[in-house]
Length: 186
Image (cartoon, rainbow, N blue to C red; front, side):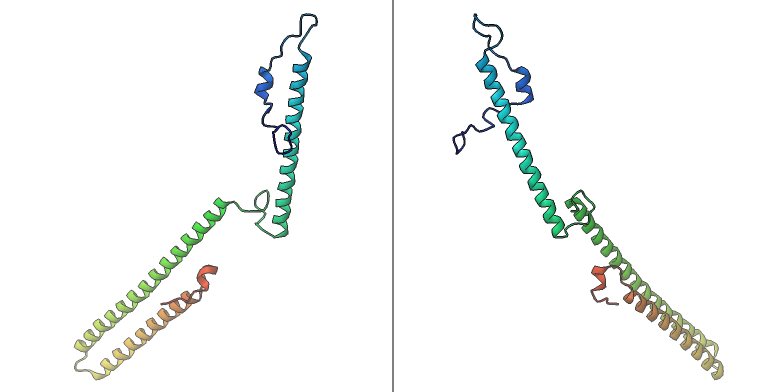
């Protein structure tokens, strides 16, 4: 029994299996069929169980509608699911994808910085090598030495300008909203 003194519906819950296996005592010898009181008692329990189930079903439908209304009123979700709320798995998958994208962008930027450093070092090595060659070839010819020096300076300026343009372009290219807000170091 519950607080109100009524029988709790689960005390005499009628299940489909219970209905299939239900038996009734035979009526007294003077009557034919089943004992009326046992049949009426079984019918009362079935009615009580069905009433309780219908009330619970209505309460759950009302709760579900109230939750849906609250979700709509608060603009939650992206309307991808039945209620418009993304699933936990979808949110976690999106977070993992964002993290992976940020790691890829970070690795690409680091690789670009390394490539610029290597290009500068290679340019300096080439300039040094050409300087040494030019010095050996033009020891007796100052005009040729000056011409080579001027040429090498132009090459060095061109390489530096190209590397600076590349670095500036990489720093200005936002890869995602999360990484665009952070300053980029080169």
